[in-house]
Amino acid sequence: MDNMALTLAALVAERPLGLRVRAAEAGLGRAIGWVHPTELTDPQAFLEGGELLLTTGLALDETTSPGYIRRLVDAGVAGLGFGVGLSHESIPRSLVDTAEEVGLPVLEVPRKTPFIAITRAVSSAVAADEYASLVRTGKGQQELTRTAVGKGGPGGVVRKLAKLVDGWVLLLDSSGAITEASSASARPFADEIREDLARLRAGTLVTVAGDYEIVLQTLDTRARGVLAVGTPEPLDAAGQHIVNTAVSLLSLALEQNREHIGALRLLRSGLCDLLAAGHSELATRTMKSLWGGVPEAPWSVLVVAGTAGARRSLADALDAEVTREKLFFGESGAFVVALGDVEAVARQASRIGGLHAGLSEPVSTVDFPAGLRQAKQAAEVAKAERSPLVRFAEHAGRGFLEMVDSQAAQAFADSLLAPLRQHDETGRGELVASLTCWLEHHGHWDLASARLGVHRHTLRNRMRKVAELTGRDLDSPGVRAEFWVALQVSART
Image (cartoon, rainbow, N blue to C red; front, side):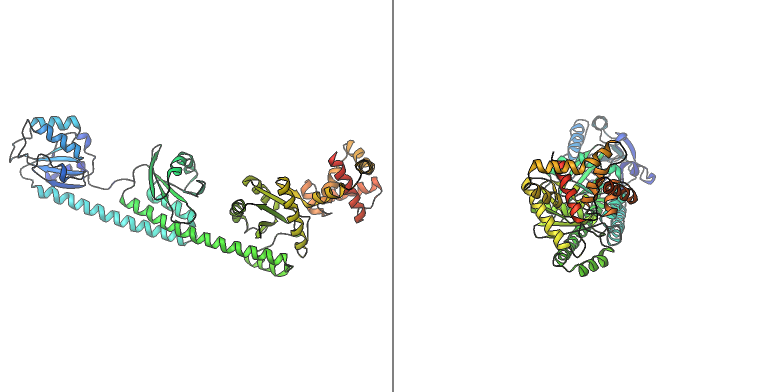
């Protein structure tokens, strides 16, 4: 942030004061915090740093001046104003030479300029600076508040804060992952501050990365988050107040959002319970009123088992997706239950790790209880086998095949599937793969054709060819079962 305080250069530019630069002109960019007149040869105990010290040099001479200048440098003063025409007709040469050597600006104050005039000029500038800072703080707080209560949400607050401090801003969760960024160019800084985040427990930490000073400040939320603000220059008082306002607004917004998400999760779990109890009409009607739609039936029910922490991580990852008509999820006991785009849920679960999923056969809305039982059974098998996913149809098929003589089963499979294999070897189609997919989707033409990437009329033609080559009626449940068993036996060899 640009510092608005009065500098030594600006003070010299006020011609009525008649000030002349006698040493260290390169240091005139220093800001003046205050003015302090004194004739003490060692005023360090009365200084805070940043002052323009005024003296007539009453106790100074060529011998004592060098030590005096070095003590002022140790005290951190911004500069020295030396009044001439009283104790000294001119500034001692040793004082000017030493000040030039150590880089302390020295201003010659003419006899006609009273020290009170310099004090008044600096005081007016400080007051104007404080007023401007107050106005900027108030304006920034108003803009952030309007953004927070409007449609911008946390992301809007982050982007607005970046503009107000002329820098970049990141909002990070407890793991250090980015939840909001002021711009794409801000994202790489998350890696540069990762070690600093590990050291930050609570409060504020200031660090540096590249050309930026970075302020890390924890949010006042149950889920520990951090706001990272990077600026080319250190934040001034107004900037610090604006950042503090952003921290308060983000903390409040995230807590409210957390409570809202918690309430929605309880509602979705209640809807799962309604479906499991057979109240499908009431459950689907509620889904439509809340989210504008329901995943298209038939439903493949996905159940995910795992530790409470892993299930919570999965729910967090899915929260952004439940507004879509293609996906609904809730919790049922120690399981996460999903409908619709269950493949996306399964992929998310595999990325999190420590989770085991079970997938039911496609069921209608009224048959959800049966699908839920199938999925839970498959999930338990997946957990026992330490597998990421088990389909109920595969599990059920394995159970039946274990009771059948392997040689007899293999002979049956080879005999039944031989015409299809011979046809596929000619390169005229993929009858075995198409039949397998069609049976996996229980004869559902649209779902199976979508999975195969072909038009449903193409899939129908292939199934007619299967019936023609084998002399079997695929509309018969028994024939379908025979083909399923043959395909499972074939897959095991």
